[in-house]
Amino acid sequence: MQGADDVQVNFIVRLDRAMSETRQVEKEAAALPAGHGLERRLVIPALKKEGGYWCSSDHSAPDSVSLETFREFVRLAKELGAY
Image (cartoon, rainbow, N blue to C red):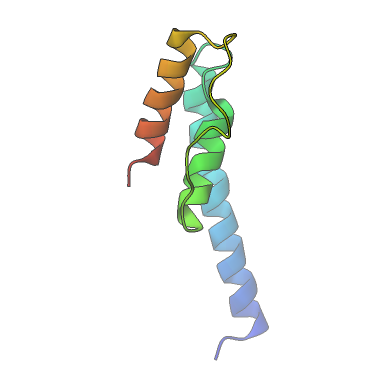
């Protein structure tokens, strides 16, 4: 059975690992032009660890979304969603 100190150490180690991963993603995302998936690069990996997610739209893409933007969305979803 783990004592309270062991639980705290395990939590701190997991938190440090998560923060390191987040810093790495932030560095990579900083090299991207504005609006190119920073939020998705941070959120999707966390969702994958917690059991997954469905990447979808609740409606069809509006006319204001360009084909280029939609293609980037699909490309990023495939990149980040691969296990």
